[in-house]
Image (tube, rainbow, N blue to C red; front, side):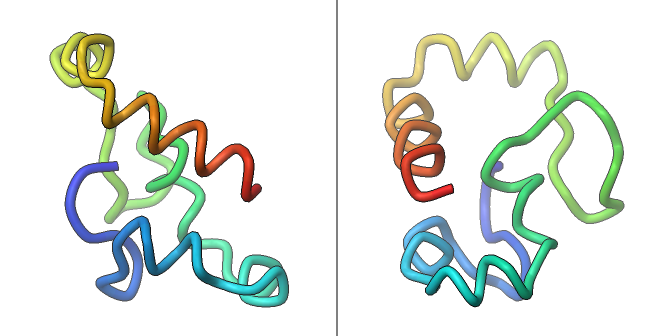
Length: 71
């Protein structure tokens, strides 16, 4: 997602969590892997405009790959 995620954490904070942290917290998924559904009321929602922006932003691709590798 864009901006701070759950508990004000950014991507680097979340990726630094231990596997136990990941297992015990579940409010980060929508920030790491945003969708076009409003599952979590505070999570970003992928609008068509954001999806277009993501296609040309290499930082987004890098973040998704890093998140997938950790997850």
